[in-house]
Image (tube, rainbow, N blue to C red; front, side, top):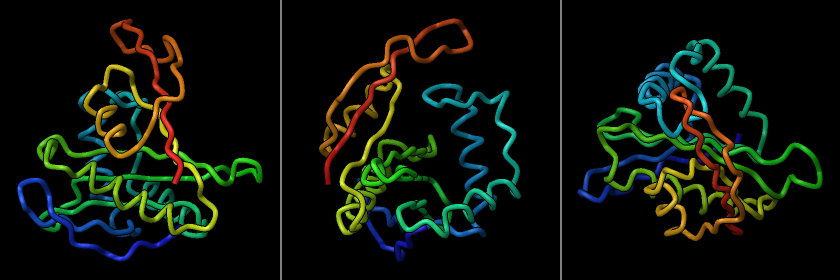
Length: 183
């Protein structure tokens, strides 16, 4: 995993946010954040009922990124508490190694404070300095208008729509919006 040294940034409200690489010791806090976001039962691929991650499994997931220079896991901390997570992995084959995708989660209590923007800013900065990465991609639920607006604001473009790609528990279908940005 590529390492990103801690950087002190500011939220929209002026609060200090530290963005840094995740460590194995972050596993419990990352697990708590994931449980909270997944528990909202919207905008995630994993449902609360199927989320069975343990601290041990979370530690192994973090460790699995450590030997891969084109993977990064970033956390955002406010008051020493992890409130945001972004993980990026590039393609594992030679022809797609120059591209990668990320997933991002922000704790509900701190949304609209620019935490997602800060994580994306750091990801884009890191990818720009990375000799391999040329393009960042993502998939987002088409009904997640706030996320799509954020991604567009930092230069992502819609590249396609996968119709009825997601099915929520209530039988409602949602399209997936595919977005990308060259660095």
